[in-house]
Image 1 (tube, rainbow, N blue to C red):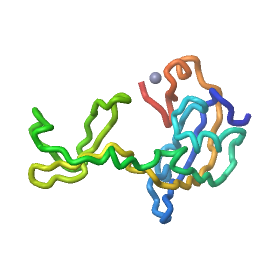
Image 2: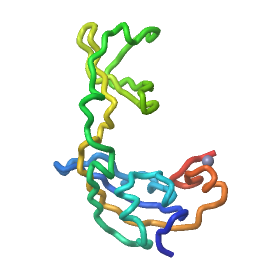
Image 3: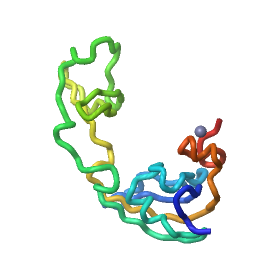
Image 4: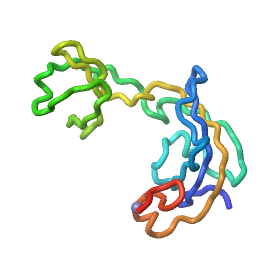
Length: 160
Ligand code: ZN
């Protein structure tokens, strides 16, 4: 069996950035489980997975355009503390949803300087070239329920 759309795929992976820093890894954890063709993982990696089989080990280099996007300076803003009406405590790293013209977006508090709060709507991995070292652990057909939900149930996936 090879990886095609609607297959459940389990992978072991390690993610490095350009500097060789490990950003994420499944080592010591359950493998990552996703459904091919359902945007469970970033497009650049999903594309590289097509046609692979169990036991395949490979490196996938993903550019920002097919990863977490380019850094958008307009999404980095200073706002007055008064913009956080009704929030008791503002802390760096706090995430919240903001409504933009294009729809909702997750923003995070980056910096607090007195009454000036710097917020950032860019993904933390925006602008980064990502290198995945991948090993395909398992490939199976997705159940109808998994396809309907758009995510994997059971090992490595959602537990209901
Ligand atoms: Zn579900």
